[in-house]
Length: 571
Image 1 (tube, rainbow, N blue to C red):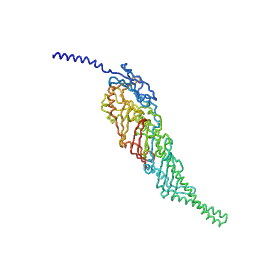
Image 2: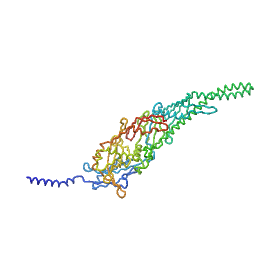
Image 3: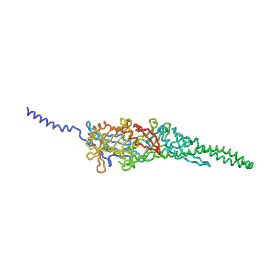
Image 4: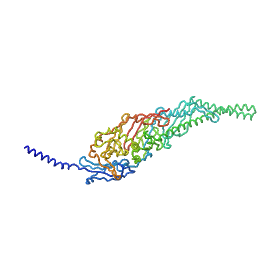
């Protein structure tokens, strides 16, 4: 029995080893899939849609008919396009290769795209509250003109120092009604009102009078002017009366005529002096108002000055200009804006001319009413792509993607893959699209994101991230959920060929599930964002920012940022 059992065991083991090749032969056979592209770079940059359809090679050749060709987000959409060739065999076995392309038309660096709009609520112009800085700035400007003495037509008028200034601004339909009241040191009061228009001059806002300045003038300085005019009239009237009396009645007539002429001249001089004083007040106040408006308009020209966000990269610039005249209504002022970005050396890739234009130019409109004393800005997909391009080309995304903050945030399953994960290094600028992936948020497509190296090949990821934004008290929570993630390897070959091949294909289904199940979240304190806003946006005028609110919506994508604002005087 023992020998029989031993024999049975030997034969059983022999049968098991004999069956092993058959069992192994029943497993899916390995498949080789590759794409070769005549290019030194692992991506394509195309001026327009219609990327060449690169042929895929597969071995064994019988699987060629099973290659699935996938274009995402669209075969002819501007922005990043991902062309994936995939073969699925067995239950969860697959091979896939993705070739990323950046497709134009592009917004070339330095070219303006009208992709922003700003809005100022009427509460910002309430000079008793949030607009108090406007009144203080006007008082400072007018104060430079006093005290002063005006000489005209033989009469001198002395204006003492400026003591008080009051300013009222009321938004109307197409105009701003301005009321100014100033009080001099001797109690003299000058009041005037006039309409003003906000126009676009050389791409910057300019405030101009739309009507006459009609002042009302009372107080000691005016009385002084009237007395001086009356005295001048009396002297002139007396002389003329004496001459007429002498001609008519000799010396006696001269004396009588001089008295009557002086009295009449004084009365006529007083009336004329009153008219003269009103006229001089109008001329002087109009001159000072125009000077103040010109000074304010000069300060608004700061809008056109280039902004360099990173002091270590002074050649990088963001420029703004007005697209058309601002729109003034009783509740708000809306400014349509164009933005141009330019990145100096060093660049990530000089072959990329600029961000993709994914939407045709169109006016931007706010979806909600103005928020009182607030400043708001909205950006469409083109504007957001300009921001993404600027951050990418200047190296900000590379610096952030290789930081420990990002690498340590990756799931453990990703960091423990069979290659050295070095972080994220986008080889193309992420592109916002107006498409939908059936998930909340706005899709941003990314391609050629370097993840590390494996067997002398560069590992790159491609896909999309659904970006969602939530207001969390004073902070903003950004959530990024990855979708349609693919991974390919690339390596340069002789003859200027770039070879794309699968890598991690057998691990990708499980890895994709881990990636898409773990959204990346980053919270930004509102105070940190407010600290980056300019504190002196215009000459002589400070601004205090508070209460940051933001939202991000799709269809088409639009970012809306709103902050409360209060103007303050500067020393």
